[in-house]
Length: 192
Image (cartoon, rainbow, N blue to C red; front, side, top):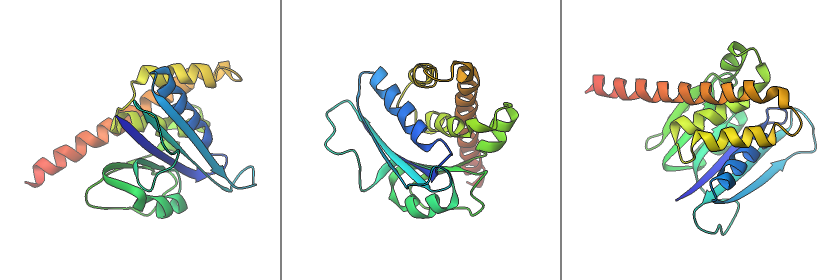
């Protein structure tokens, strides 16, 4: 088993934290994991992305030419990285920040309204964790319990008061992805 995930967006959207949580969850499952951040000099508003690779075998490189999953948190990231989803992979798009639809044969594309879901939870800053949860719904390579443990560990270090809302965001994102997958399957059946 090997998963290569690319997460991209603007600085300030929690891109690097998403990668840290994913890598920590993989390590909780005793998998090999790499986390490779890339960001501009700006604190907020600049580009940010990271790759996370986790595997049951040793990892040769922290980056890849193509990814099993790309999470695009904004339109520029979608345009830049969507072509790098490998056939059979998943593209998760933050529908709150991406107005232009993207379609491609051979991959699953799910639009998740991360900001709206986070707002409904009463904490607009957890849109990144909503998107991380959508990854677990769309491609459950890691158990949700491992990511919950990572949230308790990583977020709990500095913001113990934010653990519960992040756990709720994780579950809400997973549920949103599962709902969209179910609706897509029903639409496909209805079309035939």
